[in-house]
Image (cartoon, rainbow, N blue to C red; front, side, top):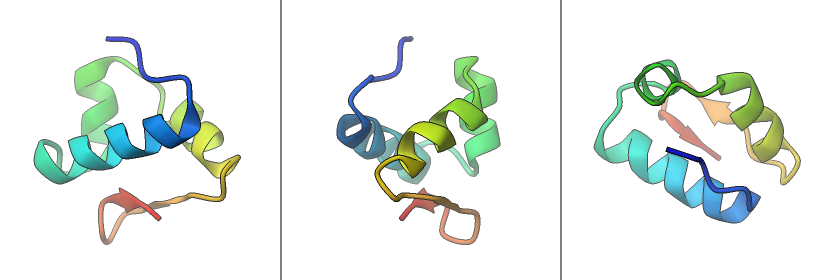
Length: 58
């Protein structure tokens, strides 16, 4: 699957997936063959960072 390019839509999509289906960002990335670094870089551009304790970008 191709991840959304728009950072706001990506944020919504990733947080929903993490909440509903995956215990961590690493698990999500492994299952979807994508890069955690790319996701983090794209979301940091809109001032969101991954929080391992809550398993979401905030």
